[in-house]
Image (cartoon, rainbow, N blue to C red; front, side):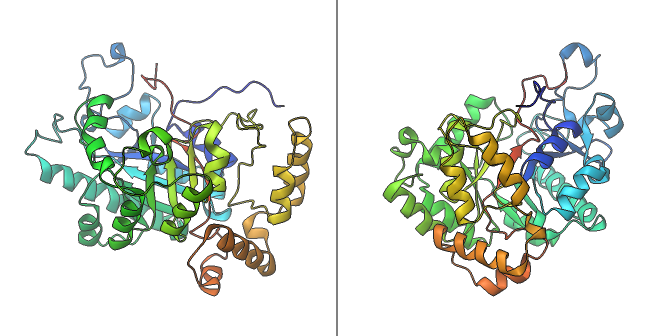
Length: 384
């Protein structure tokens, strides 16, 4: 066991560094500042204690990048310039999921309910700037994906000639309202969009992957869906794999009690729980943090799965010593791993094509564990 761990505020450089070092990658949120810079920040309102606003606008898009950095927030440039993050992102094949946020409709940038064009322009500008920065820093296309809660994502991608992997987050949600209002708006879309239709929508739009809410695998919520249900076990898992056929599916939020089942079902898990002391999951399974970038072959996976709570730490230690990272694997091991995954998760792929595209980074289809907002979502305000 390691010492007691103190979690850093979400989307800060410390949190993002922790997430990318310990897992297969990170998810983060990107917004455009008042001076047209890119800041990593989730909320539309600057997430600081009210007394720290000191009469300034509460809307993030009204602040300059320097003002936000003084409060402790991180820019996309800070992320790209961090040597440890760069090493994991570029050399170790880690994934970074960039969620682009629209300005709030009531903010000066959003300009009310009729300010749709301004919101689209903001989103387009942010994505184009981000792509340019990633290209300049030689971030492999295989190691990033752009997405947003916006129905017109494909149109933006086409109009701006974005070349990065991308996806539309569904169901679409408005920028206004609290969490309850947004979920109330989203649920009707969710109920009429079973998993099979969700996957089809992404395939038809030529999306690179499927971002997916955990509700699709909830016994309670999934019963309310029109259409056939998917699940993490048994026949519902078989139907899930039949729908996917290797199209990467990222599930959020994945709690520790379901993490093993989500990963074992061939889904990528976004987690808010990256305490290094969490090595034994509530489900009664040993935890492996790098299923894609330090992948276990079939025998190694069986060894880890057979571990008891008493012996799991020694088995994890042994595997960390024995298992090569993806970019250390020779062609034979990579081939065996991809064949194992293809059979287990019903990947509809050409082995040679996948091998060619996966020299330095795990295959795009790989099942990953991803740190949500770095090392996990934290309470509000983010900066006390």
